[in-house]
Image (cartoon, rainbow, N blue to C red; front, side, top):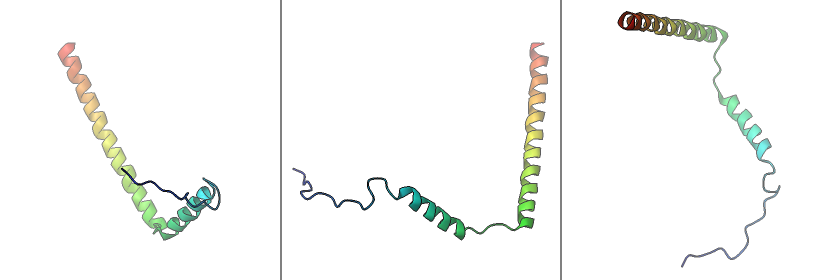
Length: 77
């Protein structure tokens, strides 16, 4: 047989959901203060790296797409 709680649970101070949104916002702001934000020059550098990478990947995918399209046209006319 399993044991069950005999005494009722202690009531919460602010109802079943009270205080959760404000606590979440306070903790979120606290965590955002801990973040090491990049400087403007670092942000520009990172953005350029991402844009160059995306352009290279788009070129590779477009090249493969054109190559496969020509192969399909060659095989199936």
